[in-house]
Length: 84
Image (cartoon, rainbow, N blue to C red; front, side, top):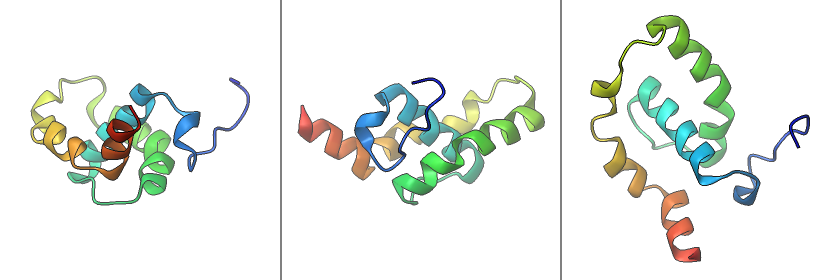
């Protein structure tokens, strides 16, 4: 599956860690998670590159303040919890 494009609209095509990572990158760039799941997933690669160029591996943990609370309010997280 490494060479195949994943369908960003199908939550089952990603592991939870991959999705959460995309949401974290979106949070670091935008400071919110009030966008669609599709938008956040489509932004992942570009935002990774942007953050790497700007911060080049610096500690950015201070920018993650509030992320966990926002993540738990996303529809994706709520749907995932309801499926278990």
